[in-house]
Length: 421
Image (cartoon, rainbow, N blue to C red; front, top):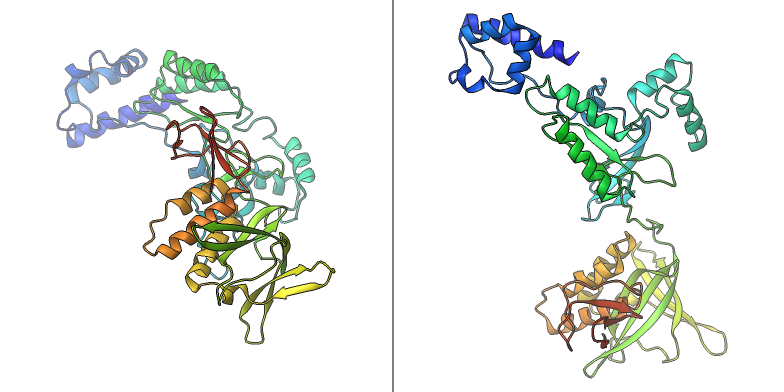
């Protein structure tokens, strides 16, 4: 098929030259050893000698562009590419501040995405031909049964034999003068040796280029509809509720910066930080609770004027509930605004160690806000998973960058020294 397409396309370009002339720098001498031109000569000598006589209107005529997403957009066949998935989720980037936006996923660079389930247009056509209502709300199990009955079963991008796909691309490349965009989809656990073999095979069969995609190697917008599998994604979104629960369990963390005493309230969901409030203890506007209180509840309520209020509640030693009203009014407003900012990153699943690095990197003018910043870092470090490697920091003792978090402290794996706070 591609041989026929190649020959007839070049014939059309030669015929056009008879009317309008060749492209300005056409020189048959420069192409006399070109493998593509020699294949044309062998396949159709008349065309070849006409091209020598008249020239060619176009420098090059053939390429195969990326056809996966393009075919979805234009609702056509994906040509040289197999269907990626007959049923899948897609993601579209959204502004989380828009009134009607729904936030389902946040990627590693902080962009927000909304997910929606779609059928591949040709799979949907197959359903309609077979009298299957595509508007029905199918379960994943029902979809799996449908896929097994369809022509797409074991024939998608992830099913096609890798070496065969490269060999096919090489066969087509012989009749395409420019390059071909074809992606070889590989599982996450593929070995480096196999990737090397695929590249070598592509070179041996004459491909001008080859794309190898290992599952999970970058974040994209096309993902599996199987709840247990994420294809091509690293979903860093936690199971946190988008809407804040009215009541959260909370840890109380105390720390001291020079002579100042500070306190942090860490709201938790599934034992993971969901929000953080930090401020001074014992000054006239500060928080004063007994030293023995380490846990309690943060309760969000609305007053009659619809403004929100966050109260902290704990049980005294007799078991009675004691409530400290309005954490937001007890703390410096500047602390409160930063607290809301970092609580937002916590709620949307940003890893704790990344938030710690983000806070540490802030360049702040006020001495008090820098003190606050150090306190938040100290409080959140308690929740970094042990063994997490710290980036961009060096050991004070031996200057090694081989630091890991252990129980909220940075521990050097080379010299063994440990630093908290």
